[in-house]
Image (cartoon, rainbow, N blue to C red):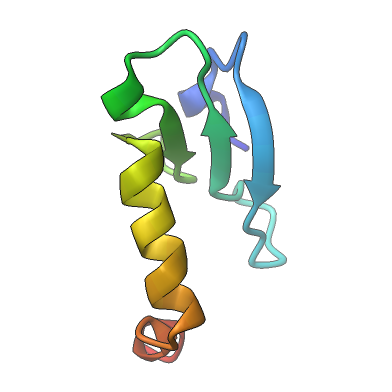
Length: 75
């Protein structure tokens, strides 16, 4: 990950989505200290962050399991 998303102290890593490059990789974290509506945190390799609730994240997982996100992988 690049230095742009530098303060990850206290976050619990869940997954790294690596595209096999040297430019950093998006990562998924749980922030136990964040409000419930922003507890799941997705960082990108450009230093941006998206916070969402566990319910919102679970919805994304269900859509992925139902193959609703397959088009994004080939875009």
